[in-house]
Image (cartoon, rainbow, N blue to C red):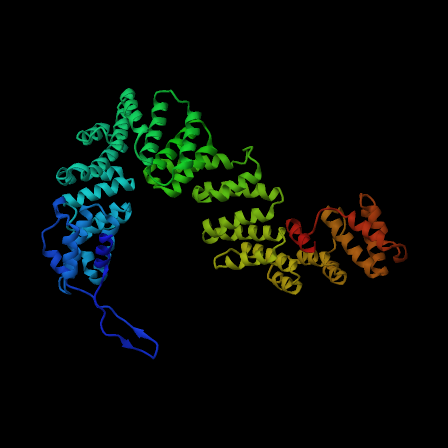
Amino acid sequence: MKSRFLWAAAMIVLPLPAAMVLGADTIALSPARLPGFAALLAQQPAIAAPAGWKALSEAEAWTALSRAGDAGRQGARWAYARSLIAQRRGAEAHGVLSVMQQDDPDLAMVAAFRLARGAAYVLTGRPSDALDVLGGNGLADNPEGCAWRMRALAEAGYAAQALGEGRCALPAVNARGGRARLPFVLAAARAAIETGQPDDALGWLAGVSDRDMQADIYRARAYLALGRPEEARARLDRAGQRGSMTERMDAQLTGIELGLATHALAPAAALKQLADLRFIWRGDHIEERALRLSYRLSGEAKDSGGALATGAILFRFFDPAAQGPGFVSGLQAHLTAVLNASNTLPLDQAAGIFWDHRDLMPSGAEGDKLASSLGARLQEAGLYDRAAELFEHLLFVRAQDLARGPLSVRVASLHILAGHSDRALSALNRTAQDGYTDEMIHARKRVEAAALSQAGKIPEAFAVLQEVPDAGALRAEILWNKRDWSGLIAETGHALPSGGALSDVDQAIILRHAIALAMLGHEDALAALHSRYAAVFARLPTAPVFEMLTASADTVNPGAIARAMASLPTASPAGEMAALFDVARK
């Protein structure tokens, strides 16, 4: 209990100065700071050995903190922080050091203070934060700085860099004894194993008791790497029976590696055991090793789905660069294999895999082609919403500059097919830019007109089409779908085919014109139409429809017209755009 009060006493900043009264009920207090200690600390000898972390008794620390005045408070805190580091009480040391830096920000530039902060971070399991403060002037060649940096690098997964600190760190490591030395030795041994230097690992562990479980596990891994499985198994048997949960998981994983190396464990069984291990153990170097092994075994078994599942976790939650050369490209190859159009994977599952792993898509044309192929499959299946989302991802995340032109047309078209004219217009507005060719500008305006038509904004759609050449067919399509018979007669009257052989599109234009005339009862115009095209239609399958429509208005009833509309050729004067305008009508 006394130690808690002692730590709290170190947190005290200063007696507060007189309060400033701002109002009847409002008082502001501004604590003073204690600058100047940074300059004093910078003049003191560097902490180059473990003796620099001098441990104090509780009584000594309490006395120093309680008697320190304003001038000596930072010094008392510094002595207490070093004592906490010596006792491996990192969290408390970090708290004291943080208060010191609040009172004197210049301490962040002093090498000894940065070393203390780095040590506190390592002791609290924050190696990445430790690396942020353990570099720079004053610590690069400092044995104590090298020792803590080696430990932080090893625990952060940078094995090669950690081993590179070994020579510099050795004097500080050797100056420690007993339990104080062990974490640094284990860090060096782990780095040696993970960089493929098992002999060096055994050298670091030579002075460590056989009773230490983690050391026994590292010895087992080293013996396994040296091709001495029996010695590895003997070490693992001891480690698996006692030790912490972390050590037991490490021993279990090493046992799987041993079973694979000696062919006592089949790859499929190993994958199951690895999955069971990862189910109960997450977030450290043990999980990373398990994922790495699972990824390798799945790849060797040609199981791209399994490799993708484990490799994606490695990519997102661990350092991809630490997984070896070709890891990212290999992972992208597995994704490509899963999403390939010839794959038998159901379309909904393929789409789900794409969204789950879109951050792994290959860059450039290869990734675009893969995504486009899946998008086309979704479109063919009538899943317009899903297809639009996929192509929209390409449009706003991957496409650049002028490449957005044709892609924006496709995205907007899919939104229209899905019945979302607002999204179509938004996609076009967000991709508006200078530099598009005239042809692309016209393509975008055609789709914009279809979206406006779907939204019921016919005048606005016509206004957009004024800037598009040869847009008469599109205007006629809008009028036809809106059943604007007068407008359709006016639009198509001057565009009727001149005669001769009639294509399916020509027949559709004439028959639609005839329907509009019949709906409005224009008998004279129908008679003229019959006189003009009767001979040509006589040779066509649509002759009965033409004859019925162009007969006397008295013989044409609404039911006959409905049948005529259903019998029209499927070809549309609007060409490929007809599907968008037809959706607008529905």
